[in-house]
Image (cartoon, rainbow, N blue to C red):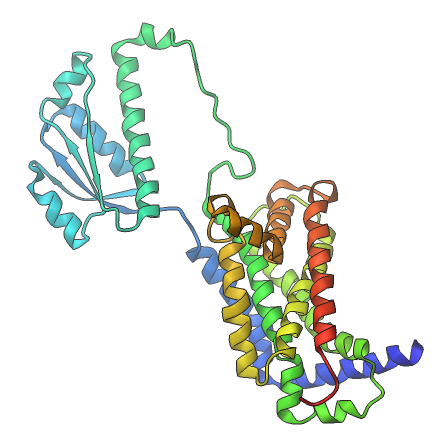
Length: 376
């Protein structure tokens, strides 16, 4: 056993020397994750702001101007024009100068003053259905708040006598900022992409440069070769965990309520899956280009879409939901968001940790069985 450990250490030194001699590696494993987290942290958001809004004010009353001022004061809308007739709605929406138009009918102010209800028409460009749904929610909220305020002014006694009051509270993300939800997920995503792609090159690079034949004549056992190949990338992965966590907490001000040692431990377990997957790809690929393409198109892309990072798993068809149980990113997303935003521990996260450990051990076993010291 002692001789085996020494052989692994020598192989580890060889791998680190090779990695150090590649000037591109520093950019790939250190600079790239920080840049990607910074860019994606700003870009990956479901919040919709500065929505171009056309206002059709056919009333021109104090009430209509007050309602328009509510939209002007909102950070979610940017009024591009206020017109009297609805004939310009089609032109603005067709040319994309406005995403949404609200029409305030004639007599709007008089009907509100007399205690009658009224309807404000909202027309939206449904090309981007997700953004449109969010924008419609913003518009409904502003109109409803204004209507409630007018109701209190006109019927204060009746308003005070309302039997039901809703006390709404939001936990873990009180301001409902999508960045608070997305950035921890990006941490998990970057770890998957970086370590899987690096380990996917492990065996293939030896084959392409001709050093695999030299390894064949060494006394290295199969497990020694696997450990020696994966350990450098595991160390790189843990460095990336520290770096991207620091960026998330201190740059994006994402709350970190949990235990960093637990995050570190769970990341190490997660790396069993990402490195095992990369090594498995390496054993079924003939060239580095083939390994990169296989990892990206056959594994990483489906994992990203089916993990719940982009689309809610609950909205997927039933049979696809069963497929997602095989995806390690699904479990680590729950873990990293739970540690960051909820401060939960092992008592809550143990099912995800156990699933990650099982998937990682299976992938490592598959890669070990597939690997061979014989030249293909």
